[in-house]
Image (tube, rainbow, N blue to C red; front, side, top):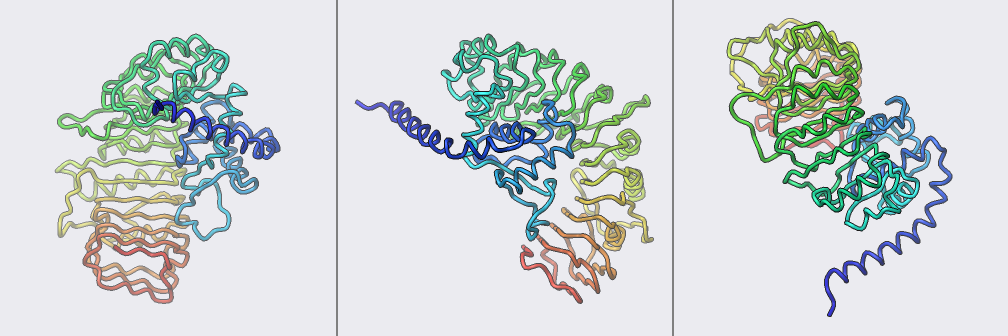
Length: 479
């Protein structure tokens, strides 16, 4: 009698033999790599098969591991792997689709071919860099002993005491990273805190009903990513070495009632470089404090009053994404003052602002003077949603010298007519307009001269686009 598990075992054995044969052919190409690229290339094998990973995530995690000294060097090394050695598959952003080469910061995602992934995982396990855990037998002592990283591909394994004890016994004093990259598991599983030297926990595919307090004992932690609907405790500041904090809510739960807040103590975590906390409200502390190293702040909700204070406390921010909470008594001038504060952030390159539950009012009166909408001059990417600005304000955006991507959603601009000035948008390559009451769009000489991608979605009233002396890109999308 043939059992299904026997069939599966034989199939896996055949696949493993095939991959081993392929590895013998591919290994010399890996061995030829300069030493500075080998660990970076091996690290890419931790991610699931055919998983398209943002390049920024790879670089940030390598920095948390202490394997990269700076983000810029990570960009350089990833570009070498992708272009000089052709070992990394990648998807370019739409703005660069015609470029034969581009900077790594312009990758949308990247991943490894399955054959190369097998080579990386085998070599990484042999060199005690990281080890994949998919079944109980993967926790054997001779393989697990001394592993620096653990990549859990079956999230339920840590719910089995025998497995958990074996892992703790064999590599608790060595492990620096604990990565849960198996299929999403909706029921909480205990995170073992026996790994006191952990620097990274990536558990976005695990669900926690409340914030796992036991993590707060891991004072060496530099990278923490969780899926959790509970409140972030004020004691989060115990993780004083933390550089990256990512907290996502469970997708099926929408909070109602009183808002949920990011604890004020987060402002005492001086090493933070990346904060990504979705759906929680951020407030600025009353005392004078700033996060000098913070370069990314996304996903949080904030009032206009909070944004005023925030702009003074994140001086080196490069990427800012905030949902603005408007109160009934705030008017258009308050909203414009918010942009005025943000315009003073000289390092800002990406800005994403959206109005929470926008109500688009007909006849809303904004000042109609040039320069009313102020933005940082170094801005490269701008996403706006729900503001209801008049189209005249586009002249202020069009004058930004470095702007490459512009996305306008949910009536970010309102009105029937947009007349673009001559020679505006000198560097814009990507333009998205989604949900608009625009009827007539007229562009004159030298407008959008570098545009590569245009997408118009749910612009049902649009009757005419008049582009004098300019040809729309072939891959423009009108829905």
